[in-house]
Image 1: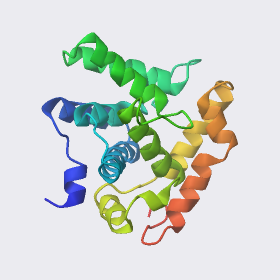
Image 2: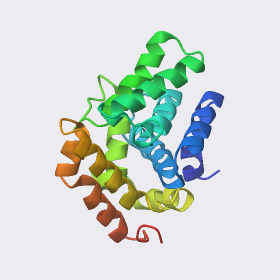
Image 3: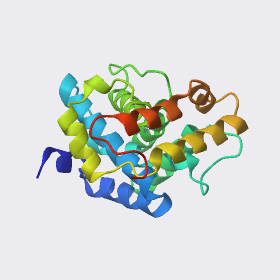
Image 4: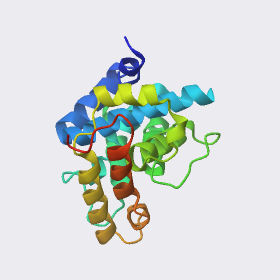
Length: 207
């Protein structure tokens, strides 16, 4: 198994059910974003020598953006809060204890913060930096180009960049006090789509 294959594989049966869930509820571009987010998070942890809970990180990575999916999009709550609630319900169904359900909620909610201290929340930090990289191209020098290319071959971006830009714009319009508004106003998703389209070895969105 190649490094990329290992990074994209669910680490436990419960993690595999989280992947099954996002595949049933989201489009392929968003599913691949979730898979890449886990891969980038694990690679970051390895580079930092950071201890983390692989199952918790995988489940959180798979479910973190379900709050932008129409089935789960709250009319007035930030999408990360809606996604965190989905994560809590999933974890309860998986039989996780109450404190572990809350951890899924926290990790998903915190991925939209500008930064998360790895000493306080390693999984929250890993998901925050991983999604920032995948959405905005932030901190790109933290991942080896060969690994990035390998992961992208196995979990291609498809139309994620353009579609997510539109989803975040819609969140920003409806929820002006949200982190989505901050991200939209900073031009993050649109800049990220442009970054990934022009990155070496990466084909344009939808190609």
